Amino acid sequence: MLDVSLLGTAGTMPLKHRRLSSAYFRLNGKGLLMDCGEGTQVALRECGYNFKPCGVICFTHFHADHISGLPGFLLSMGNEGRTEPVTVIGPAGVEEIVNSLLIIAPELPFEVKFIPVLQSVEYIDIDGYHITAFRVKHNVNCYGYRLDIRRPGKFNTQKAKQNGVPLEAWSTLQKNPSAVIDGRIYTADMVLDSEREGISVTYCTDTRPCTNLTQQATFCDLLICEGMYGDDDKLDKAQKSMHMTFREACETASFADAKRLWLTHFSPSLSHPEEFEDFAKSLFPHAEIGFDGLSDTIKFK
Image (tube, rainbow, N blue to C red; front, side):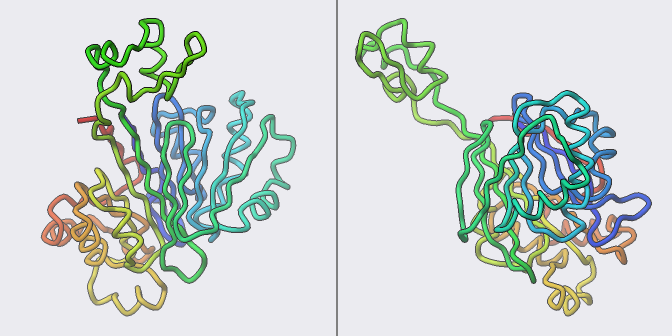
């Protein structure tokens, strides 16, 4: 199962009741952070999480409202005793930008590794997360991320016997792609049925509607998507600033056949996005208005 929490739902600037963009995921005790706006440290605590298990941080882009909380967040991780490396994923230039921020967070007790995303679509496997990074349509180089949690097939005793797999390899092949017994290689497909349906979550902020987003949100269990403006009258403003309205986010979720939609990244002018909830649900019945601290656990079928 996958734990999901919105830590900050503000766009551009924080408000009294709304911190800047961030979301946190937890799988088998391993955390992954999406963006790290100002206030992320406090929001993570309020959701009941610790800093130490967070081994992966993904950045959509490098506007301040998405990255300004990083130095303090990493310092808090070190103060909680993390010594294992932390991997930071983001658009081209991620290493230079993060290292410049870390001038005010010197001597971290762990290594910071970097994976720059350079292509329109790239795939990364780390800590049990199968990550698809995909370029979206903003006024700077910006990416969304799809997280897929894969689930292997059930162990099939009859299949293992038919394929001559020795008993001592059975346990290993339930958790690993292969095992070597007496010099012979046995593979997981010799003992497992077909892969079962997993879990998928797509996260995207700061974009106009685009093909990459719709494709990567297809059939996902949850789409976390920006809805900068609730009112259709703000479409022109959304187009000029390269953001989305509630209608556009809901239409994206509908086109993609996403199972659920959490709207986030609200304009400072949108003081009460919940007032547009009925409107959003009229466009996509499974839409929810995000708020700081909104959390859920997505379970395997």
